[in-house]
Image (cartoon, rainbow, N blue to C red; front, top):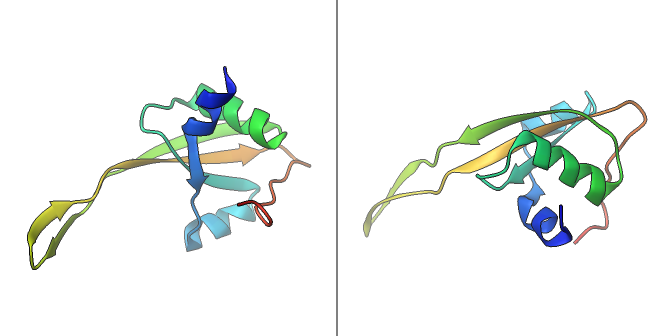
Length: 97
C-alpha cells in the first residue's frame, strides 16, 4: 500500500471520554475514511506508528440533523476505528501536529 493512501486513510485520532477510557485497555480510536476496511486500517496503523495491532473494530457514525435560522441541514457520516494494540505497543500523540 502506498504512502499517500495511508495518509488519507486515517484522518485523525478521535478523542472523547469513551476513547480515553478505552486507552486504559490498550486501545486507540481513529476517525477513518468511510471506504476503509479493517485490513487496510490495520496495515496503515502498523506502518505509520510502528506498532503491532491485535484487532480492529469499526463503527459507522451516522450524521445528525441540525437546525439553525437558515434551515435544516445534515452533518456528514464518518467511520470510527477502534484499534487494539498488542502488549508493549503504545502510541503517543503528544508533539504530533
